[in-house]
Length: 182
Image (cartoon, rainbow, N blue to C red; front, side, top):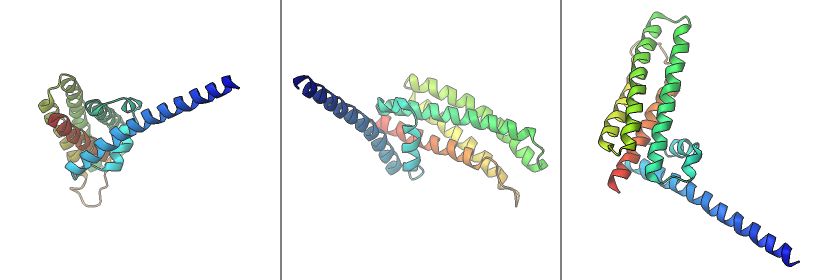
């Protein structure tokens, strides 16, 4: 009987500790996203929580760690969008759409290099360089999206991808402001 009570106690204590750790991890993501959304009207709170929470490392990260996670998510998004663009360029397209996709390919190629530089700068705590780079990536995604709107009746096939890159950029910029302020 004593052994069973001891085992039950250990199980309950372990569960409570795991719950507390998981809750603390959710709190840092939630708190960071709340501060980010409050400081920037461009940051979507729900998107922020979902994006940052998708990385298992967010469970043990501090705010600065979340900034690196956001940058890695941005790099992944930019890489994926570049691949999507290459696939779309292989398809038969309206000449205007094809030209827009070609321009987007150039923009995302630049954005990928810029994002990789930003990751290195972040790790070296050169936050002003990161801010400049991430702003450039956001501009590239916005430019890609906007050029499709220049011709009536043309719809961008990259709206979601451009939106993701832009939103991740906004999240990173907001986290940078928090990190620089602390």
